[in-house]
Image (cartoon, rainbow over all chains, first blue to last red):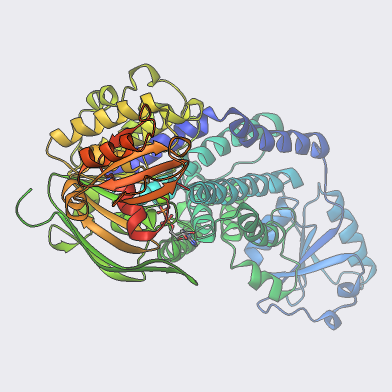
Length: 337
Length: 296
Ligand SMILES: Nc1ncnc2c1ncn2[C@@H]1O[C@H](COP(=O)(O)OP(=O)(O)O)[C@@H](O)[C@H]1O
Ligand SMILES: [Mg+2]
């Protein structure tokens, strides 16, 4: 069994490595993307104002205080510890505890300065106790880079594997394999391993480049981050395999994959945080493995989370992988109708 | 060629929607023989062997290998050359063979396979850069990497020039000499006659006849054929008690007494310089059984 997986894996790797055009594209495209990010965002900052409300319930009662009616401000419910940390990192402009009459602010943050002035303007003198919270600013680039890395893994794993399997089926290579002792699981495992190697290699390259070029934050466990990348890749390959399990046309496969990748790209929090989005959007986003991968990656890179902190996300990713591999293996066909 | 058959096909049916490609056929493939599945294009040969190979599901019927439903053991023991098959791009001939080699428990000596299929000089060539004949030899080599007990060849010489075809026949003879069973499909009667010990003739999804080629011919024909160009025999002699047919610009005279027939032709003054005397061939048998020319 291992022999057979390795045989297919080796041949697939050779095929891929010698296909210089595709290989170049797989490495160059994300590098270009990161270079573009660097050019656009070096030293950049956020444009809108975000204020955390320290409270237990999710609903925000805007009638509780006139400040909560300020336009162009996002108010987000959060627990105290997280809120203070984000204020320190410049992720939030201000954190407010209405009941305790306390607010936290980073004295070095320009956004914090405005948020504070507006709070004072809408309240009586001496109504609030001011608490400083300082730390290095987390820039948008720091926040965005995990998203870009994740998005690259997503495209590489879904399209890379999906198209290859459909091409093999369409041209009859899979039919030839069916006449050998090779089993679907073995074939699928080889495809997963092959794509995993590539995705991890490219991700490491990108990670190194962004550390060098953009000096992005990395506060937590490197090993945990590596595990997140591995499990994210495997779960996305598993989805790609399930979608390509019996399709014989590249067009149909492309359509199906787009159907998955676009919502995932928009709703997994690649480009912008979903913290202020409606509840149902946040719940919907939980069906995407990328959401969990990015939550974990950002917790590690931005807030210094370790292995134990991201264990829930790792387990979810493993669960998604198992589910789609089972579905994929059950649906798998060597040849088209 | 004794003992139980290595392969038994029972009541095989395959429908593609309205197309009834195979309509309930049964036959046994004896051990260590070259077994031919003959028939014109569209007869259902490829469908039949692909069901046996396990790559196409049958509508109904079953295939027994060594007396049991063909499964994992069959896949280890069989070698398959499809009529057409795609391979991976960017991979060389040798790498392709090595990959397939590693999929099996029992493995042939890969260099021997390469030598047998005359691929020595092509080992480092990219699969995509092979000519038709070279590719066909690679597909055969892939079918041999597990030193198969039973080898399936689907129209292996279609599209080959006569020289390449003879070389291929020699190769098949060598494989058979190693006590292998070969199942060969072809629409070339002379190929079947040259290679096969046992044949099944198929037409429109059914078996027309089956047996050893010589036995089949002897059973059907006590006569031989005299062929004359039509131009040389525009009118038959007055007294001529033989069956005659006109086809493809030739007059065929079927007779069990060639001397008598030739004497009568000679007496009638027909020029005999272009007279050809030949035995009945499988082609004739097929024509007689189906009313159809084999090569369309
Ligand atoms: N995948 C398919 N879908 C529909 N019809 C098919 C398919 N494959 C074969 N057929 C039909 O089945 C019949 C037998 O085909 P085939 O087994 O390829 O014949 P042969 O190999 O003897 O030339 C033909 O009429 C062919 O058109
Ligand atoms: Mg055929």
